[in-house]
Image (cartoon, rainbow, N blue to C red; front, side, top):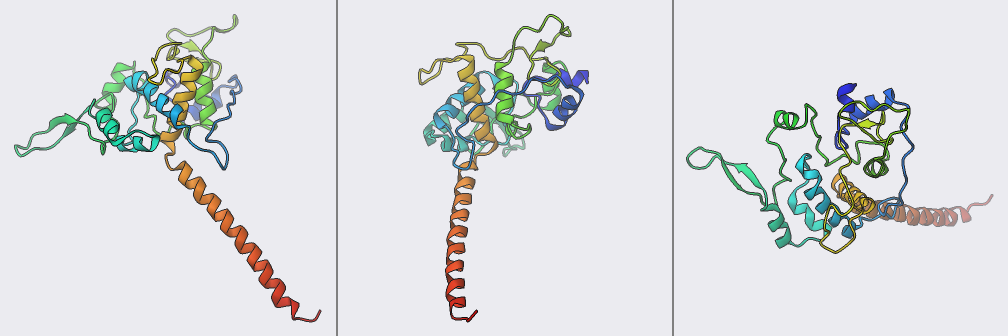
Length: 255
């Protein structure tokens, strides 16, 4: 359990959180935000998600990977092909073997997935006191009401009540199962200088990075919802036509 509670915000793997949640009954009810992606007609707030990418890059990416997202997918958020190429090229990946049978480093391409901050799990654990920062690609889906959970956690750091004893190396956050988390508050006002000039408050950065991670977890969301609405429309029209046909057929039958 001590190991589970040593995990940071990103250490939200499904099994770890399930165990912690069962063991802790003092988790504060989550804050609830009206997200643009909620509901049948929900859509991605692309401007916010673009800012969230910047927060991920400048804050989260130092520890946490995004292994299931390809750089080229960023075009879906409104980035141009040239911008995606430039963004990917900031990282290097191991490729090969070459004609000499050796592996080599090259700039990342749009077809590559986000480059992990660590070469392997052991290196990640060594850099984080034994804890393994999980991949954030599906983190919103790994927790019930994941978007509100992440937002609550990011904005929930505060001083502990007088009757709460904080273990060494942990920080108080009432939205984390057990109330104590190893990672200190990752965000502070003005920490990021947004490209579009938006004021980077903790609340704003938290909303933006949640929007980005929601998109990362379900980039097909808008297409899926459009397909669902088309299916409902088809079924509605089919039902009306079937009713009309039934009335016409049975109209000729004496009752």
